[in-house]
Length: 383
Image (cartoon, rainbow, N blue to C red):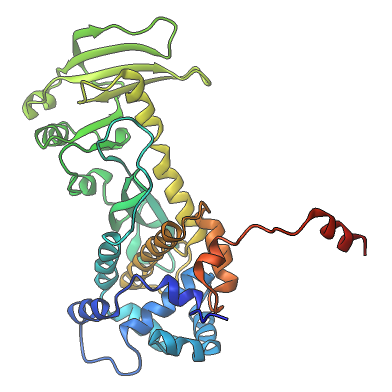
């Protein structure tokens, strides 16, 4: 029988140990670590993400029970007090850097987004990560609440979070969205919370296209009315000039205004874009596909540990969030390499009970179909 490493070992394979140690030495403060290394910390926290461990004590017990298998990972069990100290003291920036390193290694992504145009398509949004104000007073957000905020620019080619930032809950969506370096030719879709005329001008100057919702109080002048099919969902397709004072100060160029009636709900939507060549129906469909970023937030909140935390300091919270994002990429790499169409939730459920099982990851995530005749199954049921 062929030898196989543990499923955990295979999931960790894309992480170069040599490169990890180089990053660890760069993102290190204080004296040299003695009782545990940053690699031990990463293995413990990643294991807690993949196997849904709930506390430091739970992580310690699970690592201790798998001591003989951790040896082959180059790691060792970590006491809960040591792990807590590492989470609190050692910079989370190590895992932020590791995330961007792993992102560049995601193999052959999906065939691309579902639209005919070849431009990269991104959905830009943010989501609050709720915290308890009593436990995390430093994260005071609003009206007695505490929160951190996860900002994501999701690439629809493979649904990869290509741009990620984690900030205090009070941070505005726009402040981080402006910092994401979208490449010229990209199409970025976002909601009305990102409305800013100077940013619209900056995106247009860089050759980046955007699609968003139009605010009701936006003043404009219609320069051209384009023809639309009668009886269709698109009601109007217009070229407009924003006439507000802020738009004039930003020297904003002409934009596209598309009025769309949803056939199912009969609700009216007004979209705005700087892309003049796509059809009005495509503009509406692009904004509808922005729902993918909402599904991304739902998937990571339901399946990874970013709602309950094993530390209370800001550094510990950020460490756990960035390790969760690294876990997402490792699962994505495993899904692409094994060519399985499974959802993230299904893969995690399998890994949760098979993480330290010595079995080929491809066979684990893509088991062969049963060739046993139906009659034999019926015979066993009869017995």
